[in-house]
Picture 1 (tube, helix red, strand yellow):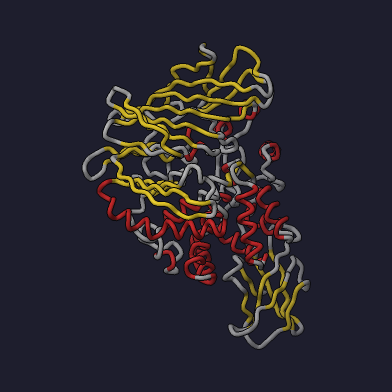
Picture 2 (picture 1 turned 180 degrees about the vertical axis):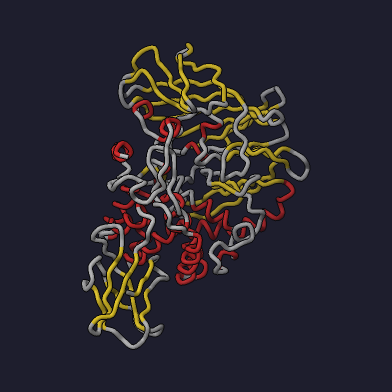
Length: 551
């Protein structure tokens, strides 16, 4: 456990409390393979990825791929060996450097490459990996990972990738760690003639390769995390539109199966522009204007692939026709369009360095659903939506997962959203809160970040000491318990928490028609109290996700 704690500090994870298991996380044994995948060792940090050219041919009948990936990098220190990642099932044909083959070794899904001479700090260099194989096939995408091979109603192939958490290295050679986003990328996918590939960024060109395949060249002009790099192959129909956004016209491109064109034109028109209007208001401009916004029909539920959001919600409102909040508000819009597009701001723009901090992606994005409801139905409706998803929270493990082993924490969606709504309520200034959300995307966007940086940013910009609040919700399973008792004509309050010296303001009143009063309990009785009244005590549990206990 001490080793885990020390390495977390080295990766900038701001994990300043005891180990994961000591904080209430499940006791787990992690393997060497987990560490090779999840840790930023010197063999990974010695080089910064600048550019990839991924060039892959997809043999759908054989569920086989072959191709190359060019790595262009800058050395951050002197080195002769580095690590990239590629699943064992994929064969490395050779690794080329300055016209010669490099020697390498493999351990689990890690590949260690040796160079013939020292690569000096600051040098810009490159190598190419030539590879092939049958990539993993997903059984329950997007909850597991890999390729999805399906067919449309006409019997034509329909192929897609979804690999978040599972690993981009399941199908292409890459530095498979969220901390290092490539600055730009060319994605060249060869698909059988008559089919189209839709990947991230802008389509630069297509070419007939002369062997029954067509190559589609997509260029990504912004930093992109490798798990959002995607293949989508089908006999797609395409239609487009433009959104008048904060930074000017934003191109909207939609790729759907031909059988679904009519439904998609109506359905996407209902939610896409209202979603963009809401999120640009709350979070700032769409982060990837040059690359545009795309919505691509996929043979699974959906995924936040940067500038190519995949969609499989069957053109229904809600989440496959249900409302996750139980309030009715979730049935007024398409969950996948709103949620997965929200990740363009939190996940694709503001990206966690370590999967242990994935609450940053999922908590903020689920919270964005409540903000969308607020934009459409008003502030009270948005708050009810966020409170409605609490029923799925288990509170059995911390939201922050163990660092350096590619594992996320617990309850990162619903509890994360309720944490953020609680913080907004503590700040009690909606314009300041909006400026914080926009500032996170402006100041921490297009790069990777940590829990420590996000919490410090919100704390500094709010002018309030929010560190104990975030520590309790993120690092412990339990939520704050507001205990209260009557004594000498007063109602006394205290917080029961794991965090020492916890303090958080909250609103109380007597009776439903009473006026709200702010109190600031601590972990000691008597530091906060109100005069007892005949009407029942009401605590604002709609806007503060807490327990309450009468003593």
